[in-house]
Image (tube, rainbow, N blue to C red; front, top):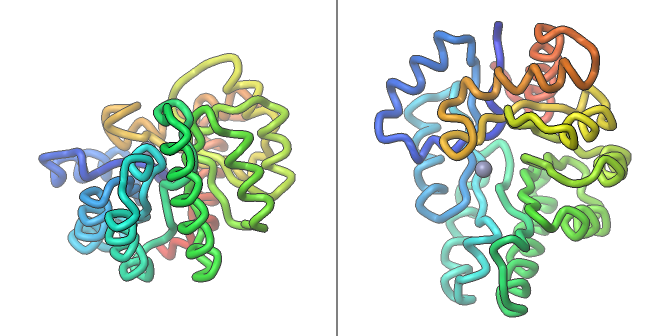
Length: 245
Ligand SMILES: [Zn+2]
């Protein structure tokens, strides 16, 4: 069955051609490769050029990277994001990460990097891919107060209550193939037309095929078949990223 991997880090694969052909033969019809560092952003743009209409880039400076950048270095890396955004399906992953930020200065730099990139995406009317590890509340509040509409909460691990609040704000979610009772409760709170699948490979699943495995979590939480979960998630990803496959 066809599926879309809505969040992968393809810059991490030394032999990308093999990964792409294996993904294609297992039904993958598109992969969103996500930037996080400057190097990953550069790689995302060039991979999308090599595999047009299959790899789609999203670029941004992740909070755990931004927290240690000087203002000058952030500005330099952000310039690349701004000048390549027109080639991308979204800006991300950006957001807040309080797992890695230890000092007030780091948290401060995370917030300023997040708001600068958030404002830019809103100005360009680009969707946002959000990383919110241990900062789910703060990230959602920032997005709501900025009136962000097209938001995808990647690997969301907040409470079911918070998931409901984000769903009411119109946000989308991706689920990785990582089973837990809390993820099942959270998925139960989110409307089926807002759920996308991700591998987050190679960090979570080994390859983009992990996104297809994540469909079983949706099927279980919603009491539907895996086929229906896959079909819905594929439609949702097309709609969210505006893919014309
Ligand atoms: Zn990721």
